[in-house]
Image (cartoon, rainbow, N blue to C red; front, top):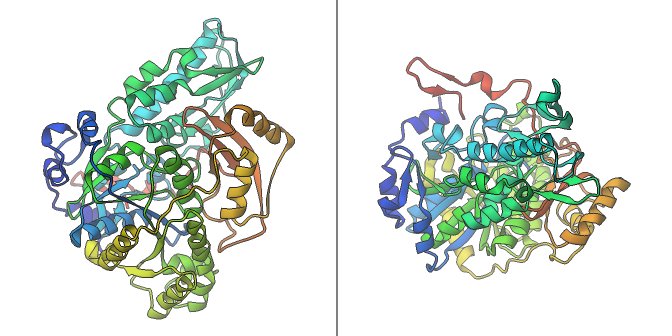
Length: 556
């Protein structure tokens, strides 16, 4: 019987984090250590390396996820280990797991098999407290807002036009819509409120897009929390909140350094969802890694229709990053599901289903080409995959001018990605990449939304109620140059999560738009997507426990 991820992680021989840091040129005295195997980097060190040349940036993305699994983080780790195995200096820049999915569906997000980052339990749970700090900073601003209203409301905030919710790092649908300040005069003025999950907080986006503490503080001040009756915006700085919020975030904003099972360096910092947020790790972590390595392997959340698009159109646009290559992760099992096979039947060979499901992969390959970055397909291998099924994927990729390479990193670690690593180096060093965002800054907001929907999702059009159209028109006046952050189901190119494969000609309904002035983008909520997820019928939490030796079981 194959060992579980947590069993493999527990058997790992970890090096002291100082030794891992030394291999990539970080002195021990520039680390803030969280025990022997985790550390944060000092900003003194980060500032000292800014004159270094940049390495090549490689994005790992994927097809639309299915219950069969794709293994994007696993492939990112495996590729990073593979690059180091073939003699390249490579660092991984990953997203931090959110507690909500760890106890909901995923059960963990630190890679899998023999392609993991460790200490796995720490990373999946409280880690270095970054998400806690983000949640507290967010809720401090919420408290300051309601406190201001309580003590006379000098700013004239219209309680009906409060934009700033509260957050908690857990999937809890009961908190989506609440009424606060009940119980009488002493508790304030009752109003409708709600909670988002921490990773959907604008502070998470600001955290990930800031260049340093000064930039962070300035962006925090630009957060719009509410409006007056005259529709004048009320900023976080009007509530005198950013100073204290920055204090809460001063340690969190430093990148976290950990290691893979093969003792290679990985920065894990910020993130993680691309269905309801922008789904990328921090700019600080990515840029720091680029100054220390020849190749940096990073990831973006969910499929390329969400994560890669936002990585390119938001993160790269704002941070001035120029990706050199893209790896699109696919599995035979997931493509069979996109081809109409039920999960219970995935163990049986079905070449026709793989071919049909490869339409999903083909759409992603074509989409990546629109950003002028070369792509390779990594087939994350399962033991049940057959030669004929893999050949079907290769044929589909060949037709689009992309190579498909089988990678066995789950079972073989970095040794299973050596062929992939060589090809990625070839692509990254070729100079073919000429990164271009999908749309220009000056394109009107409505057209930006429409461009993403038609060009990336294959939709025929976008629709919205008159009130939403009016809101977009009002935002256009002052924020028309902002990029778009689409909130959409991760399971389909459409807004219907059951519509698998590569649907075309569908309509994308825009339900809501939210201004994130601190982050510098417009969130567009489509379909039935929720910024506070719920737990499934059988949460992963049901199978997470401490064994008789006090060890954690059930994380995966």
